[in-house]
Length: 91
Image (tube, rainbow, N blue to C red; front, side, top):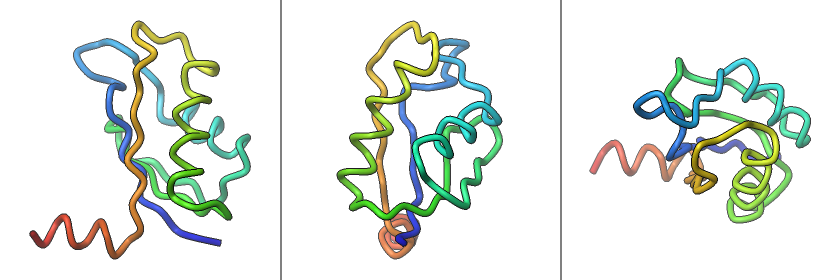
């Protein structure tokens, strides 16, 4: 099982594409991810996945427009390992 930091772009911005974090957590758990933890209404998530980062990204990007009423279906997910996330912060 891999731990990833998922940064969702295009949600909860300016009152558009509003997704409550509790519902996002349930949605991700229904996709089979475990240890799902969200951070405020930011769209930042930590989860465990048996998939690669690209597979995880694709599943999340496809599921969100199907699971939530969105003003714009262009939602992007950046899926990082903890080491990649730390490198972004450090640099």
